[in-house]
Image 1 (cartoon, rainbow, N blue to C red):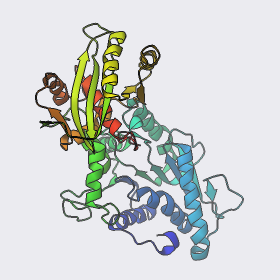
Image 2 (cartoon, helix red, strand yellow):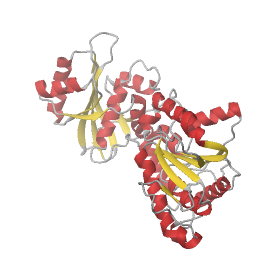
Image 3 (cartoon, rainbow, N blue to C red):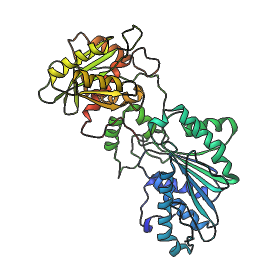
Image 4 (cartoon, rainbow, N blue to C red):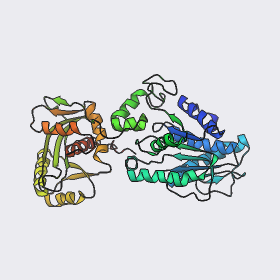
Amino acid sequence: MLSSNFTWKFPKHLEYLNSKLLQVASGKIKRLMINMPPQHGKSEFTSKYFPAWYLATHPMNKLILASYETSFAVSWGRKAKEVFDETVPKYYGVKRNQNINVQGNWETEQGGSMYCVGVGGGITGRGANIFIIDDPVKNNEQAMSTVYRDKTLDWYQSVASTRLSPQSAIIIIMTRWHVDDLAGRLLKQAELDGDKWEVVNLPAIAEHNDPLGRTPGEALWEARYSKKILEERKRQVGDFWWSAMYQQQPYIKGGKVFKDPVFYDKLPDGGRTVIAVDFAYSTKTYSDYSVAGVAKIVDDQIYMIDVWRGQVEATQFATIIKGYQEKYESPIYAYIGGTEKGIVDFMRKEHSLNIVSRPARNDKFVRAQPVASAWNDGRIHLPKDKNWVNIFLQEIMGFTGVSDLHDDQVDVLATLYDSLQSTKKALWRIT
């Protein structure tokens, strides 16, 4: 297949992918699903080089490429066109129709074409010999949304699949995000209706019966992402996202998230102290608690100093956290959604509190994953002799992300960990 100036040396996993794409082009595979970790070349190879080669060797055929939004899909069409122009006329004698030049959509002189569209977009009147769906999910917010997953499947069934003839092929390229993502739903449906999929499922770290013949524990692309780099990545993203995005084995909420705690006898010297809060809205007994947490951060270790929680009115809570702020001379970090903004504005204006707010983009289970990874790695330490520790541990150790009675202290712990990344990109923002 085409590569950049024919000088690209394929790593083993892309050689394997290349063999499957060649079978798609020859008609031997009609349904191909590619599940691989981020940044391992699956899109570069399949959405850039493969379309250029395919239209070089099948210049009368039609190819459609879809992605989570039109602009991203068009960017692949533009890249494929550049590869085509650089190599195909010289080596294959096929030229592009210069009269058709609409962003990433282009044609050959023989009438073949590449057309790019966003998932959810219309493709009326267009057929495809090969339909590529590359990254139908943009980020974890979409992945965790049942509404978005429903819309994606509906678009696939009512729009994408209707563009295919019995001789056509479809390729789905995606990192797994959720057990119920498009890949999961199609594989589940295939069990019912016999729609056979050829699945290229390559985890970042090999397990038993690896398709490439790797020994368990071997990295997928050692020359670029060594096992050491991947282990650090696992620490950063947490077990939940590591299992889904890197090992292609998503699982649902409900399991134990935090393992046994680590304690300290004496606070270390140095570092900086941070405060985090989680706001409640009512003093009624069934409401959530307002929570404030204080911790010292030394290098990449977090030492919990104090945790307060209670069901109090906003003015009372403001007095409590103002005392923390004056004592530790630290800003107060908080996740806020739409309902908390008014409380934050009130506390800033009426109580002169220095609150650094972070948008609460995902649910608490998702936000907890990076701090859970740090906790399970032994980088979060609790004092042995504080009264608040027992209640704190009851909530942390019992957290599953499913119907938890209280999870406010979990969110404060996540916020404290996020403050560790205040000079870096926040690790929980997985996109």
